[in-house]
Image (cartoon, rainbow, N blue to C red; front, side):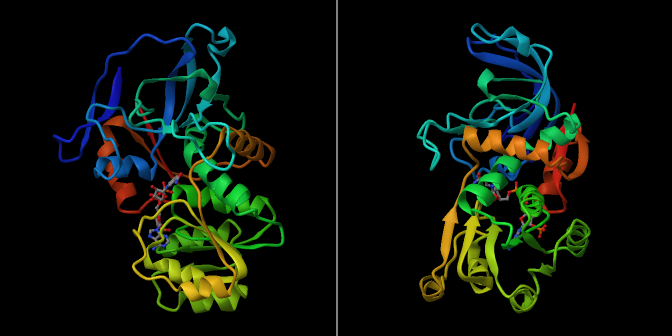
Length: 332
Ligand SMILES: NC(=O)c1ccc[n+]([C@@H]2O[C@H](COP(=O)([O-])OP(=O)(O)OC[C@H]3O[C@@H](n4cnc5c(N)ncnc54)[C@H](OP(=O)(O)O)[C@@H]3O)[C@@H](O)[C@H]2O)c1
């Protein structure tokens, strides 16, 4: 079967190749992938910046498809069902944090950038009816991360003013849509004018270009301070976020695209009683609730572009350069 594997011998670090299909173990299911989506994690793998990388592994955490076969002990009724896959494997019992056995589909386990993927059958969920296969593929990893960041960690309330930074990002676009549906007053930042325009069209109260030096002043003027900020950049821009959050407010971050801060205005954090929290993907319960929320509110992911598997390098480069607005989809 055709699949996109990590291969450090190529300048793109990607190889579209034939991979042997293996037999199913008990408790597993095989899904014929109809669409897969990229996450920044796939780019970190390509850059060699992810732990325990192995050449030959099929990349990709997100996918939607049709169940083709199930292993012993799995309900045969799954065969033929249209599904999405929860890429968070072995979270464990504690809602507060994942256990030591936690792993993410697509490294070290073969992922979804493939004709077929084998996953534990308990990772399958029926595809929400209102979503196409492409939209459904866009949802799992980014939707789950955004949902937990906003609701479990951020405890968003309808009366909150929420800032979503880096609106062009995959997780950010879900956090934005979920926060709006939760009834919050939502603001967005981005480095690109066209992305800010899109955020305004979708209901942002006000938008800010975070590359402008005075964006924090503009943000405070427009909002009077945010109750909650959802971010994945960190770096020294964390200090800007500390400036724009209200006393008693929260900053939740799920990534550190800009690296670690070299400087921290600690006094403002304790004086203003701020909460700065980390979050990663989500539990099975978070996934269940996220799907319910998407179904009830008929939320459709924003798709940036759909590429074929042999255009994988172009698709990955688009994400590396931050050109995307929403999720990048790959199909055979
Ligand atoms: N912990 C987890 O469970 C988890 C889950 C998913 C992702 N992540 C991490 O979160 C990060 C984003 O992931 P993704 O898949 O959403 O990535 P993505 O779709 O590639 O989006 C990255 C976005 O980051 C924004 N950005 C860059 N520099 C910024 C800055 N200084 N301030 C604000 N925004 C900035 C850009 O937004 P604009 O183009 O709008 O400027 C860019 O589009 C990555 O580091 C990823 O590894 C972690």
